[in-house]
Length: 596
Ligand code: GDP
Image (cartoon, rainbow, N blue to C red):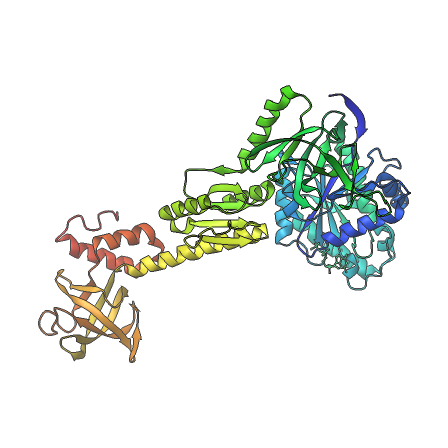
C-alpha cells in the first residue's frame, strides 16, 4: 500500500445519558455546517455528517489562539445516530472506528448512569474524548448570545452566573476524577494529552460550539495524525446497519475508515451463516434535493469514494449481512483466505456456543451482542450461547438445558429480536428490551428474584433448629392435641415441625401456633405463644409442665442449612444447634459432624 500524506477526516461519535442533549447538539452542528458552507463544499453521507474544515475555520475565527488557522484535516465526520447502541457497531479490532468522542453531560445534572457507562465504553475501546458540558443556557440568570463563542458569552455574564458555571464545571471535574480522569475547563488545560477537556456549550443556543469544533479539529489533527493518515489501497470499513430499501433490496450502510472504495470492487463481510463475498453493484450517497436525475430511491450512485465516509452499498446477497461486521475490499484473489479468516476470527469472538451453564443472549447486531455479553459477564451472569438473529428452536433447547442445571439461567435475553413465527417458547423465560443496560438490569433482577424465591422456598421447607419450654400453669388441654403455653428459648419453631425431648424421645409435631388468638406461621426466641402439639403426647405423662423440647432436625436439613443458608443462622439458633447435636449424637455419632 502506498502511503500518502493526506489526512482523512476524524470520525466523531456523540455519547452520553438520555436527554442530556446529544441529538440537539448534533443537529446544531449540522445546521451550522449547512449555513456556513460554500456551494459544493458539502458532500452527502450515509449515517454520518461531514463538517468541512472551511466551516470549522470560519466558525472558529474569533478563536485563532486556540486552533491553528489552517487545518490539515479535511473536516470532521460526525456519526449521525448518537448513543451507545450504534456506537457499539463501530467495531474495529481491539478498538473502535470512532477516532474521537464527545461525551455530552447536562451541566445542571452532572454524571448519570449512561454517562458512566459511556465513559467505560470509551475507556474500554480506547477512544479519546472531550466533555461537552451542555445546557449552559439553563444556568439561572444566563443571558444567551446565539452561536457565540463560550469565551465571549461567558465574559458578558454576571459574576454570580460565572461562579455558578464554575461550580458546575468543578462538579464535573470531581465526577471525572472519580472515574480516574484528570479534567479541566478547556481554557485551563495546559497539556491536552494528560487532561480531559471540558467545553461548556449549549446545543440550543449554539454557545460554545466554536470552541467545541475548533478543539476537536485541532486536537485530532495534532494527536491522532498517524491514525488519520490514509492509504490509497483497498477500502476497509465497518457495517453500521443493514437495511432493506425500496427498489434496492438489502443494502448495508458502511463507514469506510481507510483506503478507497470503488464500484465493482469485490467485498468480504460477515454474514449470519458465514463470510459473504459479493461484488458491489452501487455505491450510494444521498442525492441533493435539487438533483433531478436521482432515482426514486433518493440516492445517487458514485464511482468511488475515499476514507473517511459513510456510504450505502447495494450488492447481491446482503440479506444476511451482520451489522457491526468488518468489511474488506478483496483486491486480489490470493488475499481471500487471509481476509476470510480475519472476518471469521472477528465474528467467532462475539458469537459463540459453550458447553457450560449460562443464559442465552440473542441480538440484532454484532456490536450490541458484544456489549451485552460483556455487560452480563461483568456482573457475573455467565453466557452459554451468544448469537445474532431471531430466537430459534435451538435457543429454546439451550435455555432448557441450562435451566436443568441452574434453574434461573433458563433465560433468553433478547435484544431487538423476536422468536421465529410459530416457535413454542412457553417453557423458557424470554426477556425483551431495546436498551442494552435495561435488558441487562431486567435479566439480573429476574435471576435474583428467582434465586431469592428458591432460597426462601427451600429454607421454608427445612426443619430448623428450635427450643421451647412448656410454661407451668399454662396447660389448656392435655392431649389430642395438647395445647400449652410455651416460651421459645432459641431458634425458630413452625407448624409441622417434629419435636423431641431432651433425651431424644420423639413426641409428636407442632400443629398450630397462636398469639392472642392469631395464627402464626413461626415463633422465634423470646416469644410466648400457645401451641398445639399432636401425636404421642400427654402432658403429665411423657411431658411435664416446665419441660424443655427441641425440634427434631433431620441430619440432611441441618446440612442444607449450613451449606446454603449459613447467613440465616442466628446466634441463638447456633446455641440450639449445639444442644441438638449433643442430643442426637447419642443415637447417631455422625450427626452434625460437618460442623467443625
Ligand atoms: P438526547 O436524548 O441526549 O439526544 O437529548 P435531546 O437532544 O433529545 O434533548 C433532550 C431535551 O433537552 C430536549 O427537550 C432538548 O430540547 C433539550 N435540550 C438539549 N440541549 C439543550 C440545551 O443546550 N439547552 C436547553 N435549554 N435545552 C436543551
